[in-house]
Image (cartoon, rainbow, N blue to C red; front, side):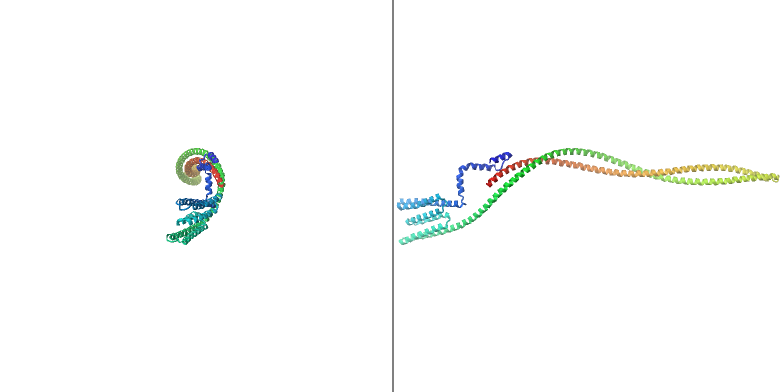
Length: 534
């Protein structure tokens, strides 16, 4: 008890069996006063054969003592009524006292002695026989019924059979003596019949009851033996269970220590987790602010991307318009180039014509010179001819003038032709220069158109990339929203983890207290199982 209270004090546990221990202490304090009574009660366990025999002897002796005492008192009154002499009373008193003293001495020596029942039976038989033959009343036979009732406690078929046979026989002898004496008439005969019938019926019913009680007792004994075997098995099982409980308690105590260490570790880890979660919460808060800033930047980028998209789309429209203009210009340049080629071809043809004209003029000039020579010859011949050749001289003169005019006109025409040739050559050279410029311009226009096409393609690529960038910005914005949502969820989860960590820490503290209580209770159970094993 002291160890239990020390354990309870050590772990600060209010044990549920303290009241029982207090009661046990009260019992221990009162054991000095009630020790003998408890010993007697333990000895009077009627399931033990010896105690049962002692109880039977005590009960039978008490009944016989009372019956003999009553008979002794009753026959004292017979003496005072002068119905019996003092000597006869002394014999009755002797037969009343002798079996009681003899049975008492035997009981004192050995309380479970089987001879006590026979001492009481024989003593009663002698007393009953003397009273029966010396009595003046027929009712004295009733004493045997009282004896049957007293001795039935032994449930001894042989004893009761002997007593019943003796009572029946001695009553038959008394009736026979009455018949011999001639007194068996009238009421006496009726009383004799009643006595014999009563004794026989009592004897028979007692034997029947004894037989039934014997069978019941035998069945009870068998059942008691079975229960004893079961009790022994139960006791052995209880002992084994106590040993197993002791082992399990020791194992549980070891596991409790391990669990206590684990809970201590969990408590330490929970405290550290709580600190780390606080740091994580601060980091998440900072990350949330940064994410909000990133979201703002992404929105600005999104606005810029939309503005760039609009500008690029406008530039793409302008480039398409410029590309169409360049195509029209390219077509005009081609038309101009074709026209220049035609002009150049015509100028070439014109130069050929002027060359032909110069040839013709050369021929005309040669003819005019020939005509002048002819007119000179004609003038000479006319001069030779005199007056006859005067008309011919006039003709020759006119021809000479005509040749001179022809040469003059031919010269002027040649001069004009030369001017035309020079102009055609200048025009041709200018047209060639213009044609070359048109070719260069055509190349430049082609290059410009190609550049416009590349610019348009690049612009289209820029538009596509801007679309991709816009989609990427939208995706980043969505992902950032999800990140914000995730951060919010992480913040909520972190808060829940913090709450759970606090709750876990509190539970760990409660578990430590519970383990302390369990350890104290297991110490008590170990001591109680040790007592149970003892």
